[in-house]
Length: 291
Image 1: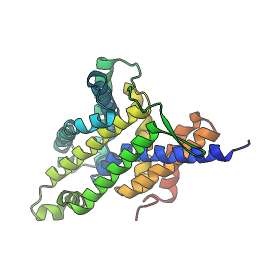
Image 2: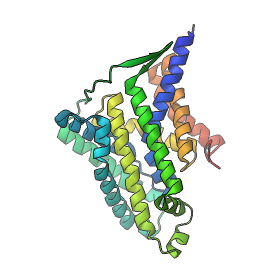
Image 3: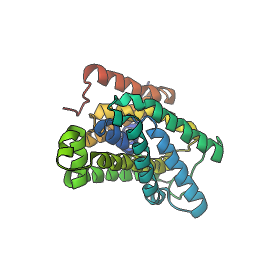
């Protein structure tokens, strides 16, 4: 098969842009799973919930999806605090393994899906904004705005949260919860509240990720299942709880998927995330960027 240089370079750039967006989808999993040891299997479905909220705000009030993502952030934060409180009282408080809560998060996954189906049906939904069909040319490159804008927003979001975790009291408290919650309690810090706020933040990133997703593609209530393997693969690939690792892991997976879709066919793309996850677990279980 002849491979032209322009096809190759466009596949690479598309993969990098897609990877930047994947970082936003996986950021919340890196917080909840990598830092808090909470296996939130419902995270991608919360992303779809965010996409529907953004679509509804765009459809009824003309809000740009990115603005909608910011507007609905407090709602997702409060939802995260509530879900964590229930999870803590029913599972974590007893000192059980985090895997015991999987059924709880599977239940949330199906509840969100059913609510979306009852409210909106099973039809695909998409937003109407001026830049979704526009592209910008750089020589041989054709860069679609529907990928470029989510990429810039996603990477900015990840860098801001990483800065907050490194430089603020709350961020250091979350890191301490991840490493030694007992020591944090001895210092007089309420570790339950810290974890609740951190889990709320993870759902905020899911809601914003959903607002970016609706820019890139149409969604339907069960679409979140397609991203379960992807977000956990990126989390493991980048190193558990390593936010910069999440970004680079997402870039690797995005490029791998783009090349697979371009040269082997789109039907092979879903296998890439699971394949990379299995290879990482087999040869470097701490992740490429883990210690």
